[in-house]
Amino acid sequence: METKDLLKKVRKIEIKTRRLSDHIFSGEYHTSFKGRGMTFSEVRPYQFGDDIRAIDWNVTARYNEAHVKVFEEERELTMMLMVDISGSESFGTKNQFKKDIVTEIAATMAFSATQNNDKIGLILFSDQIELYIPPKKGRSHVLRIIRELIEFQPKSFKTDIAQALKFLSGTQKKKAIVFVISDFMSDDYEQTLKIASKKHDITGIRVYDIREEKMPNLGMVSMLDAETGETQLINTGSKLVRMNYEKYYHDKVKYFKETFSKSGSGVVNTRVDESYVTKLLGYFKSR
Image (cartoon, rainbow, N blue to C red; front, side, top):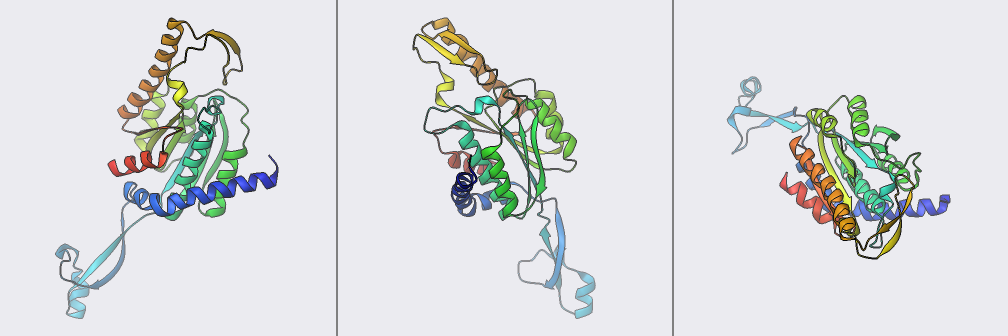
């Protein structure tokens, strides 16, 4: 992609996602993800309705007037965006690829964190760690993240969520808010998720396409496996083939939901042609 086209695309995503984060998500995000505790801010005169347990007796005695201690939330947090950039993300039948929605969601989350003065880091993964950007603050940092989401070319097209979670646990020593954004067409990550979720606040955001749920009857069709690069001739007219496909797909979805729920992590499911805004707002409000 030429630099001019890339900057145009980055700007377009910034305008859309920043508007969402400014007007919709930043408040919900702030409410959903609390700071690390309360820190002392100031002492002020007692007002009707103040909790008497907050009275500072030393200052009260000095001024011969009741004063209370004021505490503020120690807000600064770290958000880690873990984004699946394997081959299966380049699929879509409803005007957009899954990876386009994934980029928008990640950008919206990043701007919401920026609004709350939190740090944002990025992990791009396939079956290996493709790119790691350490957590940092600021608009220019978020724009770099968006740029990488748009133009980064992975070395591999396969998926290994366990490997990504292991890397997260190894690099993030302090508690972080973690969004794993993927189609979750993977398994064997139960143990690594269990370990990571003991330290971090993790949410899995599953982005999928309607055509992945059910194979249509189109007769003999040449199909490409986006993760292996293999092309096979598939008889979609066979009821058994369609049933096996649907079972494979639904088994992966079931594994995702059960594994995340068991570990105490959050779950969001959003289809490419649905409003991810509605899904994310619903999730934040339910926390």
